Length: 482
Image (tube, rainbow, N blue to C red; front, side, top):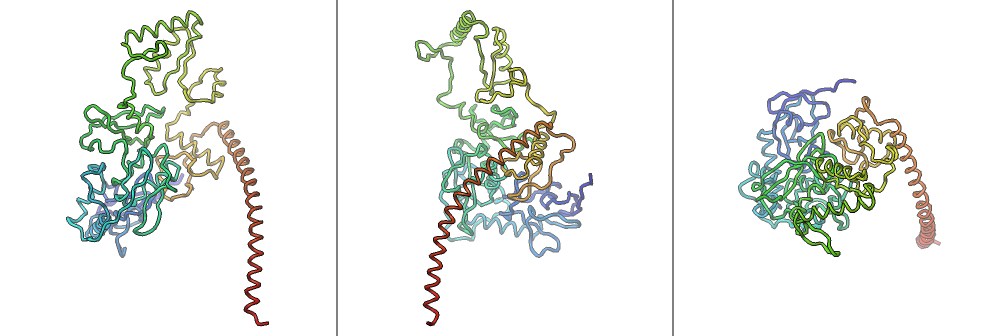
């Protein structure tokens, strides 16, 4: 393989070498030089909307956005020179023109990028005396609260839906000072990853609705934990106040979940404090559930299991364990079940297809593992899907977290390295057959729909064309001399 070409440039007087295709912002980050920004995010495509990352570049007539300016050989960049700081302060002044002064009641206070940068780049008072623009709030569902007057149109939430979640639920409408973020025809945001838009928003435009007005970020103690609702083991941080879980946010881990978290793991903490949560053991007597103590409840369970075993044998006992239980709990559950003489134990509560059990003689087989890390397995799946079907929509392709595509709405042209490990050949062939069958089915449906549409269009077009001919003949006859 050919070596990656390195580019040598200078940032604030410090020499640095970056790979070909990198930006000025990448070079600054490599030197631990902070460049103010709002719209840039390392996992999303480049938009260069906010213009806050303007820097001075040698021989350039005006400051350039560091996030969208490609690095070149011998380039000299100044991130904190007078022209750069003046440009950055000018952008900040424009961003604050319509931004409401409601930091004391904003849930983003204490972790707001706009608040932090306004201290260093904002003026003590505004020169803008006209009325501020007001944007009505949108109903995005039960999880995301909106204050769209605070929005600075960085489009992070829009790009996240397109590139990571695979569902474009938010978009940018209108132009100029009338631009705003909204959903299509008033729909709600229903993606299972919608909570990540809250983390991405650099201001208080999108905040957590369950967490609204409950606590300040500096009042929360933080504890590292693991997501209880998936087998991936996503890393997360539990934020606690007065021994009560107030919020759950993702902890960045490039090898597992990057910086994202599913809504089920993010908002499931509400069940801990719910009024319907079971706090005491209950037994069902005479058709009604009644509270009791632990000793009575355990004796009731033991007597019930013994009665079933005596009447139907050990095979009459079955255990369905929760997949959200810990490894130790699941081990004890299977040990108890097998101690009663039964092998009827499972954890797949919502699975309906058990055809894979035939491989292991009717029992749940071992978890298929390719001997790779999570990132490598996603890379191989992605490459095989590309080989089997080049025209799959981008939203259906597994993401490779280590590479951020820099072109919006395009499929990556460069394939990940697949020379070392790939999925088994049988899997690839089966995927190819499925894709081929799906393509044929879609083509048949499309052909039927197209035939109906074309017939209607032909009839309507014929009638319209005859009307046009009659009108044109009448028009020209009136204008030509007899």
